[in-house]
Image (cartoon, rainbow, N blue to C red):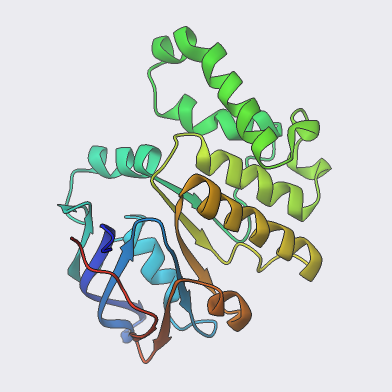
Length: 240
């Protein structure tokens, strides 16, 4: 049975400039992310895999090419629509967590809902938002750390908080950039197990960036970054 393509990139080019030197990173990349699957982008550090994910999340814009979410072009959408896309349609987790140090775990998890609403809307819905944040912390096994700030948590706990934050809007797609890259092996395995449960039990679609071959081998589809392009292992499913 074919699976719907939820996120896709077509003909993506991206270069960076240092003084007058142009450094090509992506050279005409095409990639699809299919619903219900774990898709891995694997490559050495500096290969461009994180750059591609940032472009697909509309955190940056390609020099050339197009990004689509459920058939809607996103790379040239209005800033408001791109903000909405990141706040409602996808969840993003990073290697270095990006938690706000002055906020507790539960406040960090609630933060996207606070930002994405008017003050009045948030005030009217604050109890429901906090209740969902508590449920998300419980889902990732971190409810006992709800009132702790990042400085009081381990790396694994901070990554769990970041995952809970990414799940707050009930996204259809989770983008994970080196989610175990800053963790020890045992803690990293715990995070991978959690992501696998979210995929298998909750049906969450995951696009994962990694340099770890063993992680990539367990993905449904694996794209290897080489010379600014992708080589694919596994079958990328086409839209029905």
